Each structure stands twice: as C-alpha cells, then as structure tokens.
Length: 224
Image 1 (cartoon, rainbow, N blue to C red):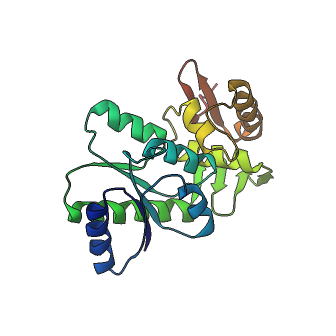
Image 2: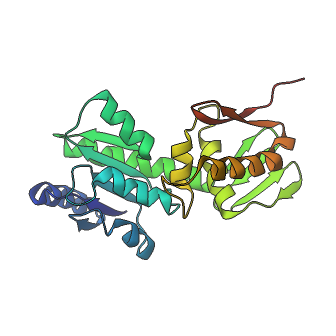
C-alpha cells in the first residue's frame, strides 16, 4: 500500500510512518497542504492521511482542492478537533473517515485498511439502480441495453450519487468533486449539469431529485 501522510508534527508523522513501513507499506511525507493536489497527480497513492491543522492552507482546504480535481482517493483526517460539528464538516468536505488525536496506531492502521478495501470494491464493481448500470472504472453508463454517453463531469457526479443512493448530497459536495470547479462555481452551472444528467438517466426508472435548500438525491422512481 502506498500512503501519503500530510502532518506538520514531525515526531508524530515519523511514528506513523514507522508503523506503516513495519507493515510493508510505502510512505511519503509532507508537512504542508499546498503540494498535495499536484503530488496525487504525479504519483499513485492508495490512501491519504491528512492533518487539519497545517501551516499555510489547512487540511480542509487541501481536501477541497483534492476533490476539486476529481480525485476519489480515500482520505482519513487527523485532528485534535473533536466536536460533532468538526467531524461533520470534515466528512462533508470530502473525507472518508476521521480520527481524533491522540489515537492508537493500531486503530489508524485498521481504519486505513478498511478504507482501501471499501474503495477497491467500489472502484471494481458495476453499480446498479433499477435499469441504470454504471461501471465507474470504465466510466460507462447503460440504461437497459442502451449505452448512455456521459461527459467526464457527469461521470464524476453520477458515480458519487450512486455511491450515496437514497441520501442527500449537498451542492457543495458535488461542486467540490467536479474537475475544474471550486466553491465559486455558480449554482446555475451545477443545476445545468444535473439537469443534463437527469435527462439521460431517468428513463432507467430512477429519479434525480432536487431537495430544496439541501442538494440532490438519487433514488428509485415512484411507481405511477
């Protein structure tokens, strides 16, 4: 397993790295968030361990930039912030898991193994909802036996919505995933993308519903 650790507390980063290397994992270290997005494009990692309290841009902004370039790499946040609000913010920004300092190294390693297992399963499977089938690795959608052409941005949005089937996904979450978009992207641009995707997939018996003030949810269409 290849891990990128972003942590400015060097003694802590070194202890984490030693524990991982003892497992036979490859480990790279960074003390700042600015280089992370470029590093993920230059090298292949299995998981990102990201501290929130970094100098320069913090871990949350680093995570936003990672998701903005379309990366679905599993991310575990490390932080001393332990309120419910902090955990919710981290997860809604795009983290897959959250571990509060101080923590046990064995728990960190176990959580990372679980994240990578879940990610590998999701990446390798074809997701199905009614007559809609989506192969995330091939970026291919089918409505019944008919292939559906999707843009790169539509693929990213559909993949995330299918992973979250039946749950509300916020506009900010989706905009943060779309390559080339950021927090300044207008609601109209996102609504246009969703509208186009809706027209392509709803003949499959699914419903891409707008939840006013909250976001979107993908679900089975109600029988008429």
